[in-house]
Length: 364
Image 1 (cartoon, rainbow, N blue to C red):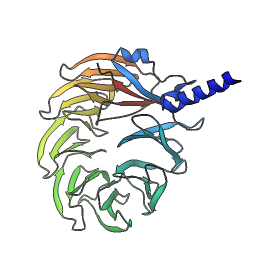
Image 2: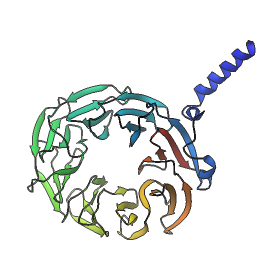
Image 3: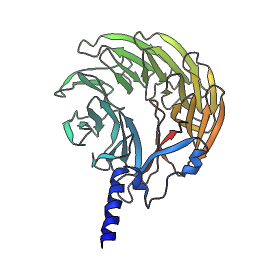
Image 4: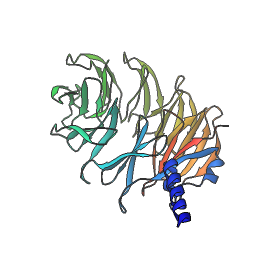
């Protein structure tokens, strides 16, 4: 009896001091550590999200120091990105209600759920404030210290006070076209349209138009503000770099097809997916093509001049950006969900059943 009690205490202690990774006991590994070592990667943590059997994980979001998993039944799980520990898990909407994006501003999460603007406490998962504007949205919302901005199905940019959620004004492009992407800070709000407009206005009730740039084809989500630059992908086959303060054209890179998703931007490289051509890595300053991977789908992370790319075939390919060549490849055939991380070198991969792992380059 004493021996049994001692074993129970020891097992409880081990469970408590090894967060995240203990959830892999009795669970089939998402990827074998031995395979990762070939690509000089290691598993930092691995766990199983608390979703029901028959429910599928659909999306991952990296926001601040957390990673969020959203299921096809609108069950949201928040994990500490460094440990894999669950912070909260809860349903945020009925199954068939669309959840358009998930954003983080300081100490609050926000999203448009159906036709409702929802704020969520990132520590507890409880809803703080909801507002029902009464119309659908066409892209994820944005916010700054004073306002929320969202593109309505009536082709207007709607602006709400962040405190009371009362609408203060709305604007539209002269083309009266659908808004496809929004970025905002306390200096300006920039929105793009399906007619190819990129428009910057003052973020307050003055509504002053600061600048406008017009591409020959619709701008796709997301536009990316990076320092003083704005990067936008257009259905006219070009990736554009603009000065975010003045709208001045800096460069464009022409691809071989209409673009259907926006770029991923790191310190030195712009990664752009092109249908039927794969993933292109473009030098941020010179717009020179560094390499192109026909089977590449998305950048997962970047570290020390190496890009970690997921392919259509379900492999993780490590590319040396300077040498423009493949250096490693790992089979990730069990992985179907992933998130692009342009902030640090951690890689987040998952499957529809809710197994999720965080990988990192091995530091020697």
